[in-house]
Image (cartoon, rainbow, N blue to C red; front, side, top):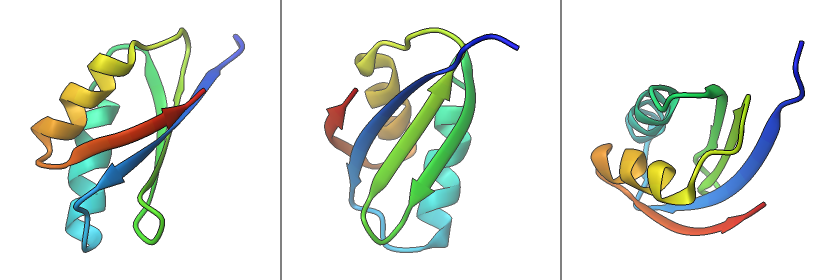
Amino acid sequence: MSDNFTANYTVTGMTCGHCVASVTEEVTEVPGVVDVDVDLGSGGLTVRSDAPVNESTIREAVEEAGYQLASSTA
């Protein structure tokens, strides 16, 4: 198994489980992403991938789900 890369983001605008499901679905479809964890309470988004994923790609996926990416921390 290869090493995974992990990036943490904050998503704004989520208010319910459907929001979490939408963000999870869109980000999971990003090529290279192997696992997504979304925390509704904090807005935290943890993305694990098999190679680094450009933040703008994650931002586009979150926006496609209808929400905003507020910040990231590697």
